[in-house]
Length: 471
Image 1 (cartoon, helix red, strand yellow):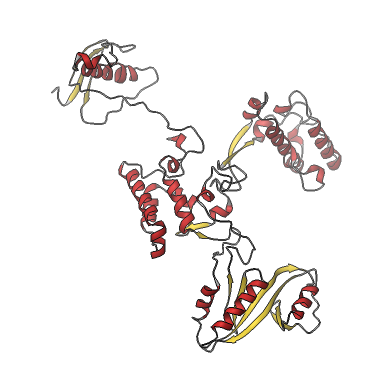
Image 2 (cartoon, rainbow, N blue to C red; image 1 turned 120 degrees about the horizontal axis):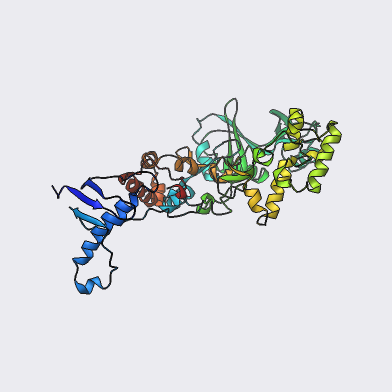
């Protein structure tokens, strides 16, 4: 019977009261109970201590001199005991920047993967962004059916206000004959009057061609002229058909947003090149909580209601409240909960008009905290703060440009927010072209191996973006 269980008789170590207990061997047994009930005294100070003591005593005298000798615990007997191991439970990192992904280095490989084969999108309109050479554009145009008529256009103005009189005159002097203005073809010889208060689009007609063999040189030259005129953009319009914008730069042709060079640090929330500028890559911000700043609304905001200003209101807040009182014709000496809701809102958050009220008390106190920290008052402020998800990045830690680069329609933040098991399935399903296999094949294999390890040890429920401090 002693072989299939650990039998403890008369355990009196520390606060144990002559305890008898039998614990099954080769099974997971949890010792649980209230604080001070003797859990550690039984598990560590009795069972583990005796197992360790017996193991050390079985060694040679020479080996024992290098090991700490443990005292025999206060217990009558323990049977079925094996050499014991005690593993301390602790968090590997307290840093708010450490995650499951960074600790396992999977996130480092994901940064390499996204910087290698990630597909950029415009973070404003969501449009796919791809730069293409003249040869690549030519190749796509050649796929059009023979006999199609096309126009090669240079979009020199896209949705901007103005008359553009000088621009149109210069284009005519350079030898261009026509332009498509706000969707209508116009001759540059005629007098063109544009309303300067409205948005306009001006697209210069660089060439008009019929798709047929032998036009490649002419078409290539026209594309290059268009790109020079429109700063890297060319519009190919099939007459009475579809139109396609091409760009030789990594930029959104609609929004005009350029994408910087994509590197691994683009996806690092520990680098200024990738971190959200609002929360510095933490995914959250410490903000003042109105409920803690002004807990008792039966008091006047002028007379001790604000906790951070219990010793007196600073001049900036006094001026702000005086302006509120003057503009809204209200007495702020009355209890705060007697004030109309719109005035309460103006006090907290300010109003856009007039400028003197822009921001509100919350903004003033937040700025004071940022300017003074760290100081003798920071502990007072800390008790008034609450952690809120960063509104700029929605807790994803990265810049909008970084979040707009995707693989399998997922940003790196979207992918790391999924359970490890789901992430593994998605990474396994990534289809690489022959070129991408050369660039990122080994990276994908490394990611899969590490994800498989986490799944094998029973951690498939974790997400890679989970803070290491919570483990």
